[in-house]
Image 1 (cartoon, helix red, strand yellow):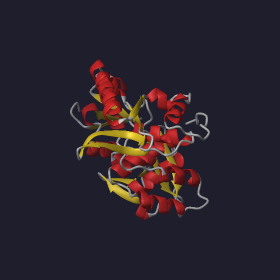
Image 2: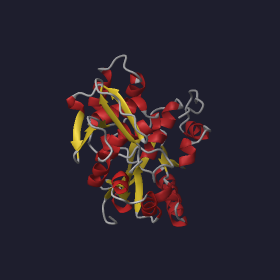
Image 3: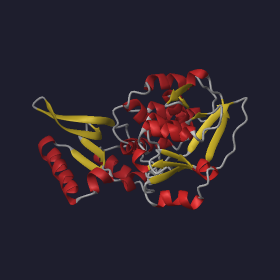
Image 4: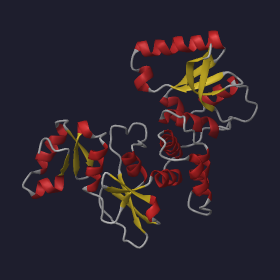
Length: 305
């Protein structure tokens, strides 16, 4: 039992194990409680086959995983900031004529589920990458949706142009206008969720849409690459994630040297922003960027995410 990739707590209970014994597997740190009754070995959480096996133990008959769970199975992490150490919720959909399953620890919806929108990943029925991206664009928080759409496109799992066409084919559908706006903001070059959040934040403030992944070149070769920026104003804006930019003093000093070099040699002013700047409630970030690019329009107040 100790080496099994996936453990079903209901099965353990039926075969004589106590809940206390299952709890000890979690407190030992070796296993993580994935869904309400499923334990997964911590070292295998990112393994696609293990993810699929864990989901298959609790997925209702006739259902397909969707939204956050389907994205996770496709390899796209949609969890909100602060929740990255927690597995996603089990979200699934059943066809309209099938009764919705009500079970603790699950979210189940009924809806149109044509065969073309269902694929099988590791033996588990799931909405296709295209349908998953469209569903997230309609129902997930905007910043989570855009990060997921960007990630799907960056991985080559969806074609943004096809997503745009498909969204246009659903006039009057719930939240479809919101979905269209987010899909049209997709930038396949985006390399992190933080960049997606930052781009959305600037756009929603009324600033011009920034260019993604700007290459700074010298002598025919790329010297630097900026997350986002405004080429005419030579202003760059970069999302500094904690893991690669703030964990050590050396990382922070390297960022300072890089931005000094960009300013002195190339004439670029580059602003580094943190998660709190992007997801916080103040609009100091938008106002600072607007001033740097000499934006003459109105800078809107902070949009609630």
